[in-house]
Length: 50
Image (tube, rainbow, N blue to C red; front, side):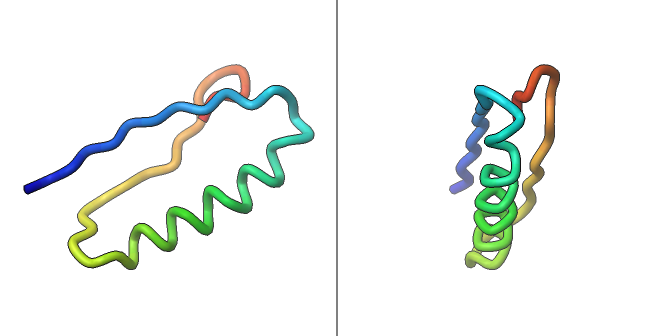
């Protein structure tokens, strides 16, 4: 059984980007090491939306 999760987060300002990036990278690494992990990506969109 496969699970797909699509999420979006809009930051309120540039001052939140460093903290968000720190935890997003850590979360991505943790997910990629999980058993059964297939693929994933961290992408940015317009206006501080990730």
